Length: 372
Image (cartoon, rainbow, N blue to C red):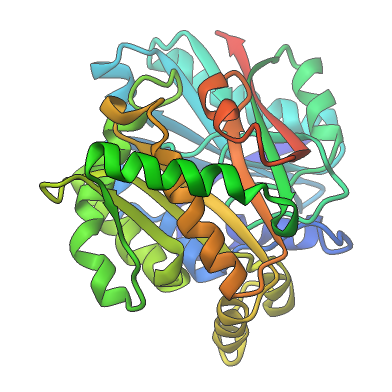
């Protein structure tokens, strides 16, 4: 018999957060989160996402052993302002027992019905800056700090329980020494002159901070037409600024401005922390922080986290400016491989801008949907 327990205390939340550590303890590819960071993300008094979302967390037990977990999430902006009657689920993990998955997802469905919602979709987080999608291909590639990893049987569980694939995301990689630089270098110079644009070159975090609010405003503007998008609030922007700024090398943050110093494009690249995170096993202290700092400074792999262009400048070659600036940093820092984090497979405009990079798709992930 499967029993569910709703998380009510800090101790129970820590059990919820650390369950994957036992589920994936023998995996070479799962990348653990930082426990303290994950606790903060799921705490209503710490994460401003809770100002526009409700979340309940459930743990599944079988024979008194913890065997699964799930977060049931309602985004009120999505429901009330965008009129999308979606019940979200995320942070889903379970042993290979269909009854465990059924108990967890039935609970999510029941909450959705209580709120007169129309369908359940997941795994997703609170917003577009959270992790989303269950891995469906690429289980033999190491995960990243920005994505969830899962066992292959999750997909069969979802399908058996009446869930159908909804959105498809791809992750790709390319070798830096195979990048055809001549074309985007030439185009970058032409576009800068034609539209009177200039780009940033930061070496200190303090130089980046004054521009971050403008970047989030542009993020909202450039992504608003995507069917998955829910706007990021001001308080969420401040939270993410504080949360991620120390993980980012300022040289990896690229902005493009017009002649009036208005930001019209941006890109954020992260060094890969995957191996360091596996080594520190979720703990920053006493030595975890030092390992992350080393990975930040000395790495052969970079992750393209976000890229956005003002709709007015899309399809005008502005991405060539970003590519050139990022490529120059990659060469300077001896980066060998760049991984593009999840992009919607049907976002053809985004796929098109990478057509000359000889990218190889290494993973696919999907969200799954069920009418309730």
